[in-house]
Length: 453
Image (cartoon, rainbow, N blue to C red; front, side, top):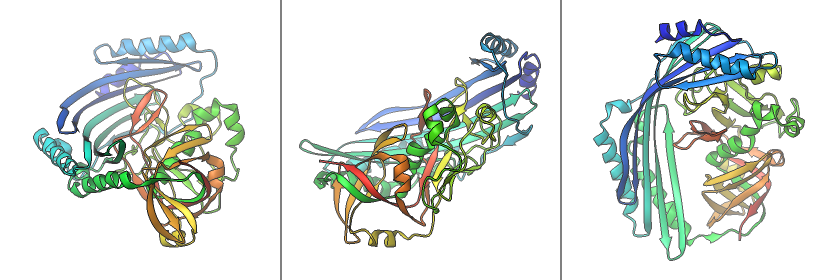
């Protein structure tokens, strides 16, 4: 493979060119209610060529390598057709590397029958409760290898083994329908999906308990968010605003995201780190061959960095961060997050809680949306806080606000960092789902607008 790719690149008539070839096998199993909705294995093989000429990109995807020199020629012709200015790419080291993945148990060593049996068992645990109307259990694993080479002389082979599962329970009492969800998935191996009977029971209990929970009263509250919701907030509300292609193309955002500007208290630091081995967003190198790294987006309350591809780094006169990623060989890499989280500090959850007279404890996120700096998130579950104690469960808790005001309103950051992956992923530019992780500790925020009934 190395010889084939390098020989094809020799013919590239471009300022820069790269070839990425991907091969792998994946497994998927899905139960919906009592029915096995889908089960099977899928093989993948394909690649792409990307060429840069006078600032214009050409891109060709393919499923065979017999005509690889011709695909290189096609990509160069495309780039020449659209290029009108100087090509700009930040310099990165020339690398030759073979990256092997270490897992506790390789999913490839587990039979499809055994994988199906474990999903069937979890599905039955969820359906045991008489209040559960339906269930959803979805298992995914994948073993992939990506070969990368460019005209700068790099040749990198990266192996990735992902394994994960999601569990959903939907409870019903008349017209009242509630659901609870749990997902786990990363690059550590098959142990991710073993011994989850307790998680199934937790999902059932959360869904059933929501049936009797009262809708929250809307208003402004002091809110404590758990590590999972903290991660979703950091990723969705702030992380996307830190992606340099978005900033470069948006004059309004460039005026807001000014380096050195204060965005929160001294204790606030937000990080994106693609080098965290085992986490769902890990890669040793991104899809441009740039080594991944720990990048402080906010450090000690101050905006310090943003996430870059080689091109955005050059255009903005900053350093590449290893954040050019594509979900597969049919897509060009764009600026994406990896493992994004808020750093923990020394505030114990119990102390944080004891100082709240009237507030809300919000756990997890069912979903949400962002529009520039405005966000809306629905908590998976929530409880009222009164006189420093967690009280009754409430539902329909929707957090709304301006991300920059919300960051400034954080007044306590916990000591209990948790990073969460899962079967979901990040979506951007028509590329979804991209494997990522996010997280943080418990965090207390003042004056959060809560939508309710």
